[in-house]
Length: 212
Length: 212
DNA sequence: TAGATTGTTAATCGATTAACAATC
DNA sequence: TAGATTGTTAATCGATTAACAATC
Image (tube, rainbow over all chains, first blue to last red; front, side, top):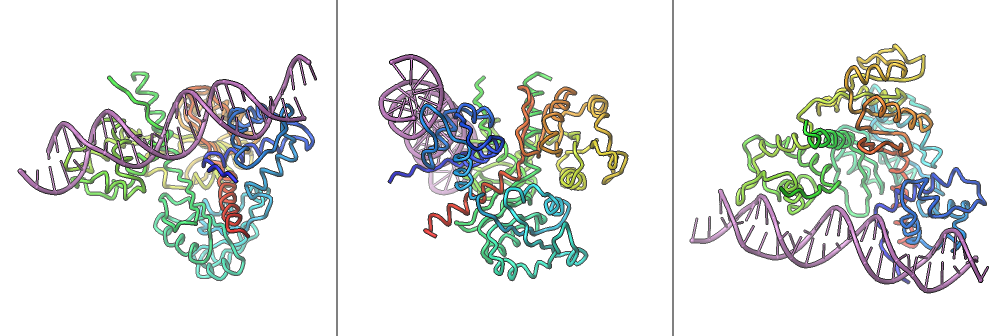
């Protein structure tokens, strides 16, 4: 039994393939070439990415849309529903609470927390905001494994530590720092400042190389 | 004159170094080792990243915090102010309008657009929402080169095309697709669904590898 | 001078691309 | 059978890590 390590970059591409397949009727055949076109990569890349997880196609024909779709959904784990905790109900947090796009993907925000007494008890988009003091109880009772953190930079490490302590294994962090977490806990950060700075870099380079 | 190509991954690390240096007093010396510790990478990586842009340190001593800080800020282009257009004032768009963190970095949202007559003319966090029909005029008049797009998946390509046509060169896109754009225009996407699916993948793998 | 640390070159690692035999 | 396309191996490319002479 051979197992090659899956490159990190393969995973988000699987999401893109999955999305592209959504537009396809179930019994339709799709080639790696076609799928590559729809997701902005190459045919070789598509075949390589899929090959890490098994054989899903038929030589000479291509991939059956429904089979590939359900296979990728199983690989990504989006065939199941996921309960998600949201911590920090500021501007960004409340925007995410109201965002219905997650639901379609099987991600359910089942608990939301803040430490602001003004917000606690209020109903945001169908969820009652709870005191952060209730975090342990809720996480454990609902067996929540996934959390989205939209607290301030100052609070982010503390919140992360608590989430990890209570059993959360995967965190999407929006605070502008990389919270430390023990091995076995996956912390991904979306850092808006860094994204803007990357764009600023490219704009600056552009101007420089054009000699202005 | 040698010029080695800068790896894409170097840029966000420069942002992290810059952030770490913010906490340092100006005349303090900092070693690559120390800077690496503060930004979660290795000393060799720090020296390599910086070396793409010149020589900033002194052998045997380290880097002077103030000189390195101002050098990185010039490389990233955050020594200048940037005018940013925001298109799409839904949940996420209004959250970004209210977010003050950008300002500190020199990013100013100077114009905001939506196509919803309910929103047009309203004042959000000090900015009056304009009809998308005013996009061309505003972009050209204010010479805006950077935009943040928080419109629906359906509208994203059309909005991107317009922005590009009117002179925008760098776009941060939050819609769940990768808008096409001509060479020379930088489009970066933050895709919340993909981030959640990546986490779902890791949670699923974890469970599988533990034989449950 | 001895110790510390840079900038740079060489070695390693990992990911993408190309090529092609096997198969439908 | 001829044409198309997969799965996989080999070649290439790019990025990270290690090593070390030069320098403070």
